[in-house]
Image 1 (cartoon, rainbow over the protein chains, first blue to last red):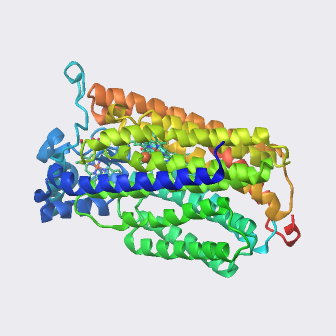
Image 2: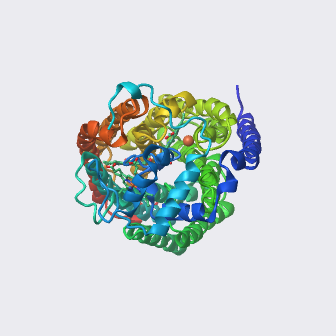
Image 3: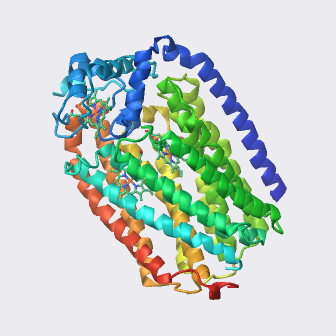
Amino acid sequence: MLSKSQARTFFLGGTIITFVVFLGLSWTSLTKEVPKRTHEENLSAEVIAGKHLWESNNCMGCHTILGEGAYYAPELTKVVERRGEGYMRAVLSSKEPWAPRGRKMVAHNFNEEEVGQLIEFFKWIGNVDLNGFPPKPDYKSTINSK
Amino acid sequence: MKYNSQKVAYWFFALSMLLLTLQIVYGFIMAFAHMGFDGLHEFIAFNTARAVHTNLLVVWILSGFMGAAYYIIPEEAEHELVNMKLAYAQLISLALVGVVAIIGYHFNYWEGRKFLEIPRPLDYLVVVNVLTFLGIIVTTLYKGKQRTTTSLVLTMGLVFAALLYLPGMIWFDNQTMDSFFRWWVVHLWVEGVWELIMGGILAFLLIKITGVDREVIEKWLYVIVGLTFISGILGTGHHYYYIGVGKTWLIVGGIFSALEPLAFLAMALFAVSMYRKGEKKHPNKIALSWTLGTAITSFVGAGLLGLAHTLPQVNMYTHGTLVTAMHGHLAFWGAYGMIVFAIISYTLPNLTGRKLYDSTTGLLAFWLSNIGMLGMTVAFGVAGVAQVYLERKMGMDFGDVQKEIQVHFVVLAICASMFATGIGFYIYEFIKYGRPSKEALQN
Ligand code: HEM
Ligand code: HEM
Ligand SMILES: [Fe+2]
């Protein structure tokens, strides 16, 4: 039967090996893959300012981005492609809580400059290579979506 | 209790119960918002309610873990806590940081990263707080007569949990990098080091309740935490499928995260078989129910419901939907909520000297809260699966789908009321026990 010291060796050995592999894989991802897949060269000052607005207002507390966040409001990674810039300007600069489908967004009341920064941020993130996420709906053509 | 300083634990547990109550209030606010009743929008917008709900969750669980450590370490090390006053100061500062953070969330003062919303200046206070806590625990352990495996695993879990808080404090310009390291905190906590804490507390409870030989229990403890890390560390990859890193993670994350349920299965088998094997029948039946309950429910909530959406082919569709909320609730409750309830139920009679074993209130608390939580899980699950099909398969608009699934939040609120009633009974019992007393020493 397994002894206590063998059990300990299993724990320590297994942990160290998998942790080293994990660090190795992470290093490769972060140095080789992320710069290309996220187009790091396009991270302009505007995009970064947009990200800052995204964070300081906790948009992730209602929306998801890259599929992470809350489940109360639409996923926004591909929002530029889905709605276009004009629509987004209306949403972001709205003085009243934006709610065409009944559910309310916070009226952030952003100025021109801030709206521009947020839109740049969404344009940048819309171009990140996400291995096919979000999936393309199978039946879109047969269902009448508004 | 054997050592006077163990009574510090009581106050951490009391804080824990208080914060849980508040967490539930904010849960209801969100459930109503999902149903379309967002009358509080002006004052408590959804993102505020959510940040408060999840942060209170983390703080009440951590407060429960700290209480557990302050009770378990003196008993295992056979030594009083080195500094009781400092432990009380640490309790008060934990409560203060928590309260300030939560008030801040009502005034747009936060970092806006899921689960890591605490603003930077408060992060530093959290670090100081946790270092104080670890200082007391580690010094006590060091000065103690013995260092058991149970106490070492528990302490190791707490130390790693503190270290893993740090990657969440690095600032990145790139959202992908941000997300990458956010998971070092969130995933490596709940599917890694917190399982060590859970395993340590579980082993302590089993030793006390079943009377099975320590050597046997601690051997299996090593196997369980071994399985946890071997699967859980590389299992982090199940969060890297669709965030902008490469395809290697689809394979590595898929395979290793699919192995993660093994650790939870081992935990369930371990608890049940030790119970069967035990000669001693400890009279504290309520503590036994919570102990076996946490081992089994965590396997269902974390193990099975985690497995349900962990493969990349499935996760492509369920990623970031209410399916995740379904799993998040039963996993957090089963693994970490219930282990805190188990240690509280075991320690309260020892801390206060009152033996209210086998009370009807205690049993009602157990069954109502668990059945209520299972019902909530089903409600989230049905809403989530419907959302996946309508939105991701059929291509309906997000807002239209949400209208279709509103009714499931009525079911959610009904089940949540049952859950809350159970918690109400538990807290009533907690209060009825009274404060720690001198007479309780030596029990
Ligand atoms: C009793 C009442 C409760 C209600 C009505 C409730 C409701 C909710 C709602 C509506 C959400 C937000 C989902 C969204 O983003 O749209 C949420 C999030 C969450 N709740 Fe609760 N909750 C309750 C209790 C609990 C308890 C006891 C726990 C843990 C033990 C818990 C853990 C969580 C977690 C971890 C999340 C985040 C989930 C995720 O991001 O996937 N909740 N809750
Ligand atoms: C006690 C242990 C666990 C807890 C408390 C827990 C809790 C959670 C929470 C709160 C989330 C949402 C995180 C976020 O979006 O920030 C999540 C996501 C996830 N969990 Fe767990 N979990 C546990 C164990 C597991 C296990 C063992 C598996 C796999 C077998 C698993 C699979 C997943 C997956 C795949 C996601 C991502 C969902 C998505 O793509 O939206 N979890 N978990
Ligand atoms: Fe995970």
